Image (tube, rainbow, N blue to C red; front, side, top):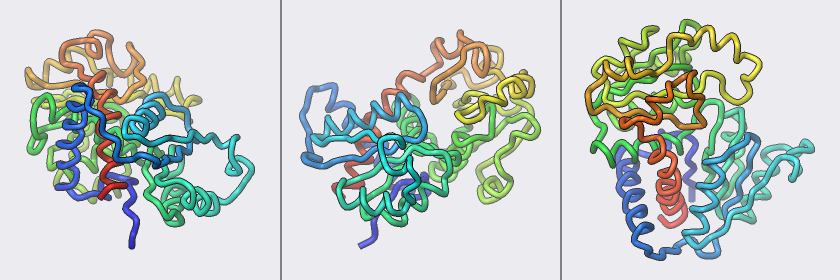
Length: 301
């Protein structure tokens, strides 16, 4: 029997993704109501981290505890991966011992290789190409505040990074219009965009992207591993800060999202991220609830 992995949003059907939205919100209500639900009792999640994390680690670890299971936190220095063991060998061993594996790493090819040799589901906790669990949380947050995102306009302002790629996948899977505004030279790959031309438009003008948007999203200008580019990126992205002036071009009830951590005064002004249109804290919390729904789907279906 084939194993269901979750490496990008494309690994689930649009119907499955919408069901996840419903289930994530349902589990959230149950958690608030104090209901105990432990379908993963005696199940173990192995968490392999090659990149630092706050939200990914605590949300997955808490999710497993609340579902009755356990999570093991693994750093490269704690395992033979840090001493050069092949990825496929580590995958073979871990997947014979734990029930599900979450990997947070740099190269997307590494998690693809890991999944090919794993006997159990592998979840992408972030790679340089995709951050699908964050997109699940973003979509759940939009659904909870504004209903179905189908047919809406979403503006991505900033770097053509892994979050941008994941929003391209989300536009395809959730059927919304995505306008991506990046400085010249920082666009997502043309190959990825060309596969989704029915849903994606590129521009170098943030005002054009924000016009009549229902959701405006941004991310840091320099992601992990790009610290040496910080100064150059600050210059390139100087006119790409999400401000109240930019938000005023969107619909009056438009939402603002950011996957965090945020740099106030760089990619977003403080009055936007801390303002009434911002739902970043709901977004962060929903990592817990939607990942519980994802774990349930992968292990209990």
